[in-house]
Amino acid sequence: MTDPMADPATVFTALANIVYQSSSLDEVYAAICAAATLMVPGCDHASVMVRRGDGYGNAAASDAVAATIDKLEIAVGEGPCLDAIEDEAAQIDPDLTADSQWPALAARIVGETPVRGAMGFRLLVEGRKAGALNLFSDTPGAFDTAAAESAVVLAAFATIAIGAAVRGEEVDTLQRGLASNREIGKAIGMLMVLNDLSEPEAFNLLRRISQDTNIRIADIAAEVVKRRGRGESAQ
Image (cartoon, rainbow, N blue to C red; front, side, top):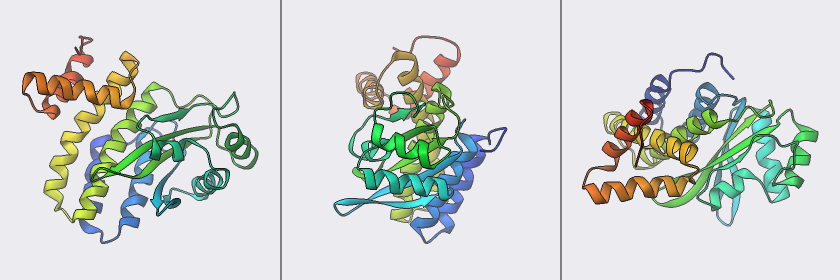
C-alpha cells in the first residue's frame, strides 16, 4: 500500500487512458488491482475474480498474496469474493481472526498468508454478474468506513472501465462516464455508511429520488455528496 494515498482523480484518469490504449482486458484488470492498492486506505493486496462458465477464475492480482487468496477461495468454496459476485451487497470482513463469516477460508488465509482483512465488491458488465473486485489488508481492522467508501467508488469506476474496454469506447467518452459514476459511487458510499443501508438500498434511494424529481441520477448523486460535505440531510 502507498502512503499517502494517491489522488482518486489522478488514478481514474490513468485508468481511463489504460482502457483506451489497451487491447487486452487482462491489462485493464491489472490496472484496477493497482488502483485499489493506491487509493483504498488499508489495502495491501487486490485481485479481480471473474466468472468462467459455471466456475470462477483469477483475472488479475496485484501480487502473489492476492492470487493465492483467490485460489484458496475457489478451493474452499466460500468467501467475500465469491459472495460478491453472486450477491448485490458488498462483502466486508475487517478482521478474519475474529468469528469470520467464512470460517474455513479465514483459517486458511490466516494460516497461509499475512492477510487479516478482506472486502469484495461485485463488478457488472452490461448487466451481467461478471466478477468481483477483491481487497485485502494485512492489518486487522484497517478496513473501516472510509476504506469501504473508497472501495465502492473504485468498484463503480471499475465496472464502467471494464464495460468500456469490452465495447472499445474512446477515452473522452469513458472519462465523462467515469466522472459521472465517481459522484454516484461517492453518494452510494456515503448513504451506506451514514444511513446503514446496503449497496442496492442506497442505489435504489438515489434512483427513487431521481424518478420523483425528474433529475438525472448523476446530478442527484452530486447533490448528495455536496450536502453530506456540509452535514445536511440527503433525503
